[in-house]
Structures are given as structure tokens and as C-alpha cells.
Length: 247
Image (cartoon, rainbow, N blue to C red; front, side, top):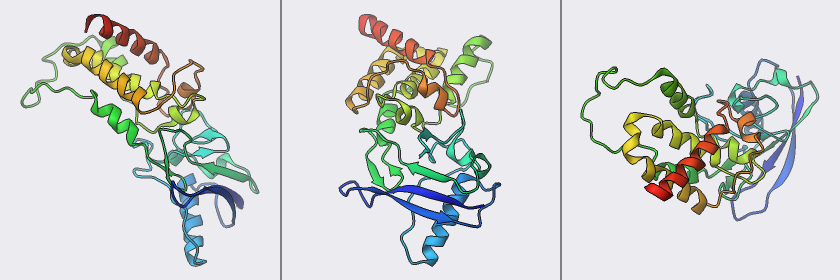
């Protein structure tokens, strides 16, 4: 199998970038997309050229590190999938595959396909935790939680922080990410004591980081690897208003 990778190359944030094309032969349809990039980099090493910088970690769809834009879509042509779960069988022999980094003001480019997503970490630091000292882990059934409540909390907790919601949003909004992290804890009894402080702190930090506002197009829900619902955003706005009034 042969494809041509059209990849964004940029040596650093202070330098201009451009697309470069790399015809690659000897690939197989069973290769994952990241394995194909590895193969390309091995070829570049043998040719004495600089490798393409890209991020990855678990390669199992759970860490959120591997996000890139592929042919105009976050993570590639399929809904609810990470880049590392994508395989070359999703493309045709002879295809040209365009690969870009996340595009958002709050995600400045570090090099090539690598962007700085520490803005998401700073949002987390403003309240995505429970600070009460509870000692050792309690018995699992010590606090009874209705199944529907626990299920919706865990649905929000599934967010892996990849940033696809930001990259695919026309406003570069981090609302889906922030809402998922807020609602995960605010729906549970353990998160109730700090619920108003949490939502105010995290939403205010999201805005301070320069992310855009949400206009509810639903693109983020489609591209989210975990399929997290945009109803979480509506719930976040409701909680934020209540926190401002009563917190």
C-alpha cells in the first residue's frame, strides 16, 4: 500500500510553517495511523532528514495524547475514535492524507503536529478534584448513589482530555471538556460541598485561557472519542448561573 502524507511542518512557535508531502510505500492496511507515521519517521532517519514530531502515549484510545487533524477532521474520518485507533484500511491505496495539528489560539504549536494543551490542565487545577480529607478509601457502598446519577457522572468522567472538541469547534471552545469535568464531580454527593466554587473557578479559567464560546453546533459531540453529550454544556451553564446567584 502506498499513500502520500501531506504533513504540517513547523520547527517552532516563532517560525512559519508549511505543508510538506512524503510519498510512503510498503504500508499495509492493518497498520494503525501512528504506526504509519512511525514508518515514515524511520524512513526519514535513514535518509538523514528530521523526523515529524507528533504526540502519543498509550496507543489504546484512553490517554488523549495522539490528537491531530486528518483530512479536515479531528482524529480522522470516523466518529468517536482516537487517532491511535485509526487504521490505514480507512484509506485507499494512492490516497493523499493531510495531517495537521490542533488549530486553536489556546493550543499554541510547539513543533510540527505537537501543540501545548496545558490550558486544559490549568482549567483542571481550578476545581476538578475533591479537597476533603477522607482518610483511607471507604467501603464502596457507604454512600448510596442512585444508578442513574452514578451512570451520568461516569459518562462525563469518560472525557480523556484530548482536545478534539476544541479543535473541531468553529469557536475553539473548551465547553464540552470543562462541562464534563465539572459535571462528573458535581453530580455526586462527594462533589456537592464544593460545587459552586468548582464551576465558577473552572469556567472563569476556561475564559481566561482564551477559548471561544459555545454556539451548540454539536460538532464537538460527534468528534469526541467518548461521545460525551453536549447536554453537559447546558448543565454547566445552569450550574454556573446558580453558583453566581447562590454560591
